[in-house]
Each structure stands twice: as structure tokens, then as C-alpha cells.
Length: 599
Image (cartoon, rainbow, N blue to C red; front, side):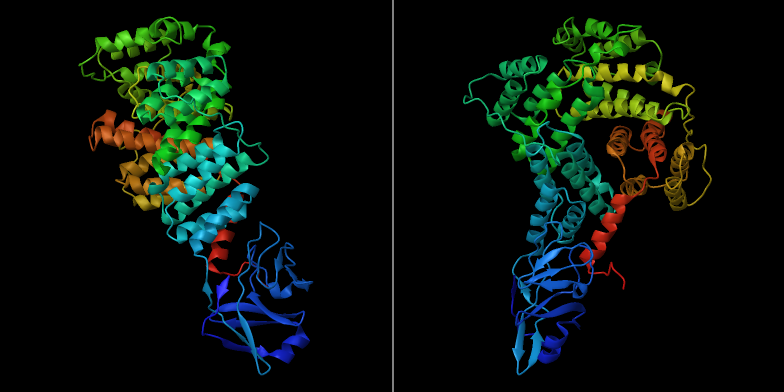
């Protein structure tokens, strides 16, 4: 709705308007369509709010204005739309004085832009309307709304309207929130739009989730609640598990305690659903760091179904034959896979000790003897290595598998090394949240998956050595060349080489992140590619925190490898049709008031 101001301008002669039926005027840079219908004069913005078609070329019948481009319909007097995908059209107050029509082109709008776009965001989510999502996310950030607000709205929607629980859409939303500060301002809008549209798509045609309540007691001990939750997950009792987890949140258990409950269950069987379960759980906790712990109840409860419905790698032949890797791991864990006595005993031996990474440790993790790998990890625990210490090493080894992925392999096997990398990264991030002994199992499981991926590095693609490509070129030119590799199919090794050259030429890592982020978000990037880039950024940042500017070969390689790996992964999956970017561009132009339809 609009409030009349004192700025009425002369628009047209009433008789001329009655005879013509409509007329377009320009006032303060805005094209306004005047209509004479049913004995009344009405004025609306001439741009259809859907796609910008001139409404003056539409049809008015029985008080309804219909746009001829996509047949969006509007109530002429107030501008409200009949079609949620179209948005309402702004109206303008009119007066008739002595046979002349006057229009107020600058009325005071009753609703702030942020409120309008927040409502439209909910419509876009509910109806799975990509253009509405694009316009609303852009509009909210243009109105200086913090990205966390629309993220919270989307998180609530995604956990409420997806019966099967946490999925790829919410993971994408969380991943992009994690990298949003690394992006250019325009790409932050792309990131929010990408996350929201994936959640809307995931929830489309899904039945809603019906919550199980928490127990009406606060007297259950932490250890008992943790045991109940794990037991329910073990027998795939999702209702019981949900009640336990909601009770943990409702009774005020700390984030670290709730994380321990979740990650213990997520590692009771190795590498659940190709690593997705633990990765989803980690992203849920990361998402709560953005929007606040007050959303923990529904967000974490949405992890239950992925846990109880998970595929268990200890039931897969690849983990049992020709070497029984599960038995090898159980010997370390303490026998029964649901017990941690063995790991706890190993960890107690290293209490108070500070572990030093052996020079050959990375090579051991990438070797082809699983017993040697498991023994090296067990010795590290015994020597004082924390879950975080070891998770960092395993994540780096997993990134190396991606960086050295041989392009002669089947294309789908990119996802095999990718899953190991994002799982290992999730374990690493989880160790910052809780020091629960169960996370050692995530480390061992991740290392086992690194071992299983070894044939995908046969022969290994070469990783550019530090200073191998110090061409002296301008790093900005190297970044531009990197973007260009994403415009052509199959330039995988060139993308990796260019990242190495960028570092060798003294390029700023923040600029490289902006370039990779832009290259990612202009594409119709899939779930795995979006995950891969986020994991690479996290591993680069973690390596930078650990090593600083240290110039040792180990430090330099650890920083470079995840960025080389993700550039290769991106190049393998690009270019795409860029349909989402087309929608984003249209939404940006519409929100700016630019013409979309020419003619």
C-alpha cells in the first residue's frame, strides 16, 4: 500500500485517457501505466514485477490486469497478484481535477523493503520458485539484511518440510554460509541464492516432518542419554532417537555434549552412507554457529533419519574383501564396534604427551598397506596425538587423492575421492567441537577410505611442486586464465597447474578464493562441487592457522594441495549450462529497475 504525498504531477487529459483506455507516462524516471477502466483511473508501474514486460501492452478485464508475456494477473486497484510467482505490482495514487489526471509518482510505501522481501522469500521456498528466491535473496542483502536472517528462515523451512531430514540442500546452505566472507559482494548474493534454491528444491513435493517431543524429564544423566541415543540409532529406531536428541537440547546440554552424542552415533559404524552422514552432522553444527543455538532443536533432530537410514560400510564387500578392514579397525577400537575401550586406553597412554608428526607420516597414510596405516595411527594416539591432530593429517592425505586423481579413471570416480575428502574434512571440523574419544574412529575410518581410493591415483597426476612454475607473471592474469579453464571441457591438469603458478608468483590466497568462488557460483554447480570447494577453503585455512607463513616443504604443500585439488575438481565438472546464473542476472536487473523486455 502507498500513502499520498504532496508531489502530484500532471499526467494526461481525462478524455484522452478514456478514449485510449491506457497511456504510459514517465515521472521521476519511472514508467507508469495509466488505465481508464470501469469509470475509474488507475496507475501502476509499467514493468511487470515478474519479468519486466510492459503492462501497458496487457489486457484489462473485470478489474484484472493480465500481462501478456507469462499471463501474470493483478488486481488493478491495489496491484496485488493472483499468482505467487509474479509478485505484486506497485500502484500510484491518482486524482482528477478539472478534467486532468494527476499522479503521485513518489508515494510513501507502508512496508519496508526488507519486510517485503522476507515475505517473498517464504513464498519462494514454499512454492519452489527460483526467480522469486533470486529476487528475494538479492533484495534482502541490498536492504542491508544480514545473511544470517534469511539463512535462519531457510534452515527452519528445510527442517520442517522435508520428512527425510537433513539433506543436500541444507548442506549446501551451510557450506556457502561458511565461505560467504571469502566472496565478492555480488557473489555473496549468488551464494545465498544458491543455498536457498537448493533447499526449496529439496523440499518440493516432500511431506512435512512431524516432530517427536522431548522426554518430560530432566533427570536423565548425560551418559545414559548418549547410550540411549546410540542404541536407538543402532536398531534404526528414528522416533526413539529423536526423542533422546531433543531431550539433550531441551535439558540444556552444552553444544560439546550434544555434539558428542551425535558424533558417537555417527561413528558407531564406519563411513556411513559414503561419508555423508557425518558430513551432514558437521554442517548442521556449523550452520547453528551462523544462525544461533536457538535453532538447534529442529536442526539437529533432522539428522536422525539420515543416521538411522544410513548404509553401513561394514556391510559392504569393499570393506570386507579381500582384506577385512572392519576387523582390523575393531581390533583397535576394542572389539565391538560400539565400544571405545581400546581407543580410550590408547589415548590414556598419551595423556600429557605432545605428538610430533613423523616425516614419513603423510606417505604412510597414502601407502598401500592398511595394517601399516592403522598401526601408524594407533602409535600416534599412544604418543599423544589428539583427534584434531590426526584428523588434519588424514584430511590432507584425502585432499592429495583429489589433487592426484587420474583423469583416465571413470568420471564418476571423482566422487569417490571427493567423498573421502569431505568426510575427512568434516571429521577435522568436528574435532574442534568436541574432544570425544569416538572421533578417533572417524579419523581411522577416513584413513581407511583414503587407502581404498589408492587405485584412483594410479598413475598419480603430478602435483605442481613449489616454485616449479614461478613465471613472474601478474597473479591477476593467472587468476583470469584459471577462470578461462572453467569455460572449456577437460582442462583439469591445467587448472591445477595454474593454481600452483599463482602461489609461485606470490598471489594473495584471498584473491584466489574470490576467483574460485566466482567460478563456482556462476555455474550450475552440483552438491558435490559446492561441498568440495568449501572443504578446500576450510583445509587451506586450517593449514594456514597451523603453519602460518612457514616456508618448509611440508607447510607449503599442505597449504597448496587443497586449492589445487578443488581447482582440478571444478575443471572436471565445468562448464555447465549456467541456467541459475541466467535467473540470477534477470533478478538483479529487475531489482535495479532495468529493462528486461526490449520492444
